[in-house]
Length: 256
Ligand code: HEM
Image 1 (cartoon, rainbow, N blue to C red):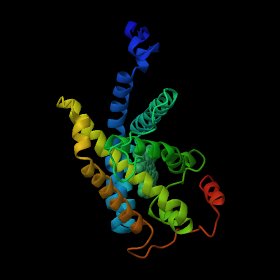
Image 2 (cartoon, helix red, strand yellow):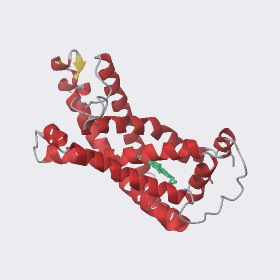
Image 3 (cartoon, rainbow, N blue to C red):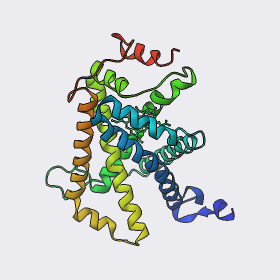
Image 4 (tube, helix red, strand yellow):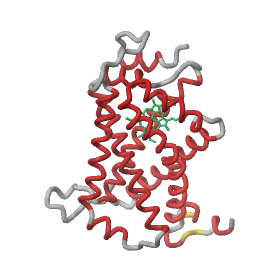
């Protein structure tokens, strides 16, 4: 406790609980909880989507028994909230000290704005932070007003079919960023576990491999979206949803 109340002089009058080391520890722990959930969600979205509605919704119903358990779901959603809060704090801190939003590759011959592998990780966290609140609100908030609300293959298909210019880029950036974020986090956790201190240099030397990791995640996300968008097989439009604008659609989720 006294540690918590002591000032962190390295970090200029910041309480130790907000020291970078502590925040990284909190990010690590909450990140492990989120990735536990995301591994199931990844199988559901990326693999299940290729097996039509039955595959996608079947896996969702199976995994739901775990992540929508009344004790587990608050832990997952709480971890997401804390992870995002710490992330926002770190971004604001960087801005306060006039640091770049993400780490750039100054030796890049293509463009001075190309991110390093760690910079891509920072960028992915910005995309995920921007999208996750809307996503969780869309899939979980309406349940408070409409107990029958559920989102599955046909609901995602409807959004892709009705507003492709919004939903293809949104799901694509969200999903590909999350896959990169997930793999890079595990690499960093391994570096800590095996005391690899020169990880920044290793990452930089293998930067093209890290771009490929993003590329593979991007390809997997694209293929899942083509399946969900009905490009691989015929999908029946969801029952009872006619032509709506986005606002009407959002409102309809809250109607019983
Ligand atoms: C193409 C991308 C994605 C699609 C199509 C998608 C689809 C869905 C669907 C259908 C649900 C409802 C599941 C259910 O009711 O059981 C859901 C829930 C959820 N998704 Fe996604 N998702 C995507 C990406 C992501 C990503 C990248 C994350 C990041 C962690 C994420 C986090 C969540 C969370 C936290 C929930 C709520 C889980 C719960 O508490 O029940 N999703 N998503």
